[in-house]
Amino acid sequence: MKTALVTGACTNTGVDIVNKFLEEGYTVVFTGRDIKKVVSAEEKYKEKFPDCKILGYALNSVTDENTVDEEGVKNLFDDLDKKGIFVDTVVLNAADQGLNMKIFENPLSDFLRVINTNVIWNYSICECAAKRMKENGGGNIVFINSNTAYRVIPDRIAYSTSKGAQLGMMRALAFDLGKYNIRVNAVLPGMIRTDRWIKNPDFYKNVPSKYTPIGDVADGTDVADAVWYFAAHARNTTGAELVVDGGNTIQLYPIIPKDKGEE
Image (cartoon, rainbow, N blue to C red; front, top):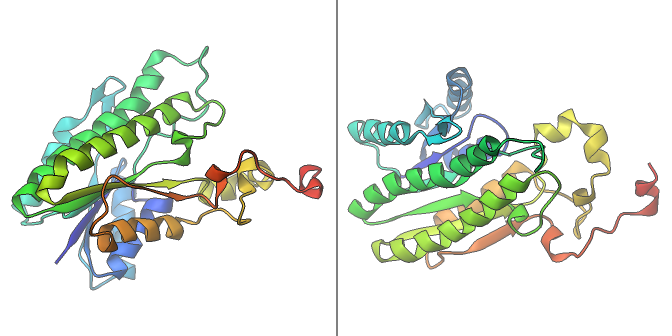
């Protein structure tokens, strides 16, 4: 039985990724920051997929803005070892969004928290997972990155920085781990239709990144399909990026219809 570990999977895109792997018959281990949300999510997954094995763990990225919870990561993998569960696919979905981070207003600790979560903590997970993949003949790691690694947006300095660094780490891991039959790739979503979209209709009604060349933005299931491609089909692909943003990255600027811009 194959097993996937998906971080940040109590809401939104993480849920769609978990659902995809459960639909394909995987055992799924998932994490969330809040134990109550983890328990609630696990119950919902089990209700929807009664024949699948699903385990939820509360796992935070940092103990404070300066300290990555490396011990928590090690404890997670040690517990899976005790249960005889080998994770052959890791999907690194959890992230600190670093919202509204203004260079002259936010303290340096806010910047460090985002970098520690999105880069250092993910490296810690990769290290623990890859050690076991090496011993078991291989595996694959998929980063949920962002097109903001290349195309920045206002007041997201730490987030864009972390996503650019994450891509560098992805390529370096792909190179160093390839000899162990461990593939490492990244999915780069653009705007995703999450609960933030639903809760802020006035903001998202005319936000520029909504106007993609194909006229639509991604759902979580679109991201999940891209993850599944890397996990199940891309046997000879490593160190690669798959952009899922409706074509936003290829355009110099969005073409906003006049009637929309005047709303």
